Length: 405
Image (cartoon, rainbow, N blue to C red; front, side):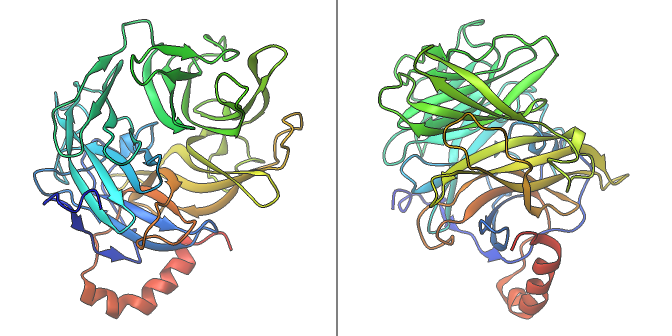
């Protein structure tokens, strides 16, 4: 294993239950968990990430509800990659602390978690996601506005720092993804929406044609995206792109060889019919997205939906978050949008879901399962407590967290 020789890598005990009350929706550092969900929405285990040592990794509810707190599968499928603040649980003003180090975590399929990779973040800049090809390749991590930096797995010293010239990237990178060995990033700004291909050597930016560069209807942000239908003849690699958006909902874009551009073929917005399970569907947006193809050739998407209407009061406010699923049965790209999202699972008061991806290969996750980054929640029971709580925990899971069948 790549991380076997790293002394700070450790096996994290797993519990079968997370939830309970929590602090207010603020910038206070929260404990981070990686949840193992089946694609039917059943929580198998949750792994606690150490937020107390010198390489602490924590998040807060404010960033969990934004485009940050993402989790990605390495391109080779061997590990999960996610990041957070290098601050112990309970640290106040975590988000706005000047130049507070960020930690990048690599979690292998065996359950080993390493957080020794760190980078500096500017004052007030939220944590963006990290990416990793796997093997001896460096980590790519957003280190601040207009900046993406490759790091090694065992050092906080960047191999190279690539800073996008002001104006060349229209806003800070909201989220990055690897598809087909290429690096793509969406933009985060008040009047721009798009997906961009990034050259991994020079970091030159190619805006994918057809995506608009301005919106007349106000602020919008592409929080995540997934690419489908690989096509060697397409200069941008994929014929279909699904984009999650803070104000527009989920959009499907397809590439036309006749026009050499992408066009938006449907949009599934935030309404009571598409997100009936949310308390306030019109204030709910999709912040994380991952895709696979089923046995019928249909594209199946999983995502995290955030209901931005704050719940609770006093010292126990939170946002509702949901693990959702959507199947797009139209491979031709000319049909209409699916009717609605399916709710698979939901966060409980005192915790929020950040991002979702597919679980890595190994023994810590079930085959084909989903890995969800959870911010906040109950402490992890000791192994002895787990034995005593086994039956009760299983009952709680069936009642509180499992929605799908």
